[in-house]
Length: 331
Image (cartoon, rainbow, N blue to C red; front, side, top):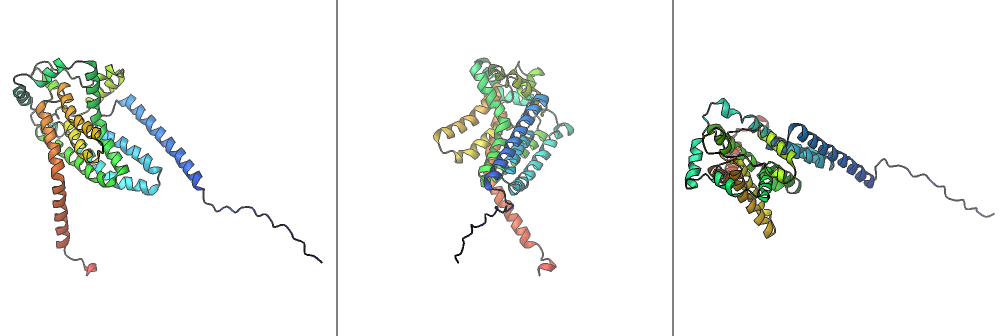
C-alpha cells in the first residue's frame, strides 16, 4: 500500500493589525496636503477680510501654524516639541505686543523736531528723505523699494521657522536675539516716542514728505496688496520711529545668516539687504536717517552682547542652585 501525498492546505494570510509603511506614508501625505491647503485658504481669506498682516506677532502665528502642519505630519512627538519650543517665545512676544500702548498711557511727549533737526544736520541743510524722494522716482526703484520694505514683516518669522526645522541648535540663540531686540525697541518706544517724517510733514513741522513705501505695488500690478499693506500700517504704533526696528531686524538677520552663507553671492545679498533697508525706509518717509543708524546700533549691540549675557545668566543660575539649602528628602 502506497502513501498518497495530499496537497498542503492553503492558509489565508493572518492580518497582523499593523498598517503597511507605504500606506501610512500615503495617508500622511494626503493629510498633510489637506492641512496645507486649509492653511493657505485661511491665510488668503484673512488677508482679504482684515488686510495684509504686518505685525510680526501675527505673522509669527502664521509661521507657527505652518510649522504645526509640518510637525503634525511627522508624528505627535515632533508636534509636542514644537509646542515646548515655541510657546514661551510666542508668550513673550505677545506680552511685548500687548504692552506697546504704554507710550500713550504714560503720557510721554512725542518727539518731532529733534529728529528732523538731526537729519537736516546730517544732510547739510537738506532732509535726506526729501532729497531721495526727489531723485528716486523710477518705477523699477519703487517696485524694489516696496518689496524690500514689505519683506520686514516676513523675513524674521520665516528665518525662525526654517532654523527650527533644519537646525534647532541655531534656532534657540536666534529666538533669544529676536526677543531681546524686540524688548529693547519697546523700552525705547515707551521712553522716547517719536514721529516719523511722514507724520511730521502731515503736521507741518517739516516740508512736504509723502509716505510712499507701498507705492511699488501699483508698478507690480498688485494694487490690492498696497491697500492691504496700508490697512495693516494703520494698526501699529505710529510714534514708534526711534529706533527703526525695520533696520534693526534686517541687520540682525544678516548677522545671523552670514555664518551660514556658503557662496559669495549669498553673503553679498545679505549685506546688500541690510544696507538697502534703511535707504528704502528714509526714501519712503517711514524713518529718519538717525532712526536707522540707531536701529543698526541696537542690532549690533544685542548680537554682540547676547553671548556674554547668556554666560552671566548661566553663572548666576548655577551659583543660586549651589547656594540653595539641601531639602530634607535629598539628605
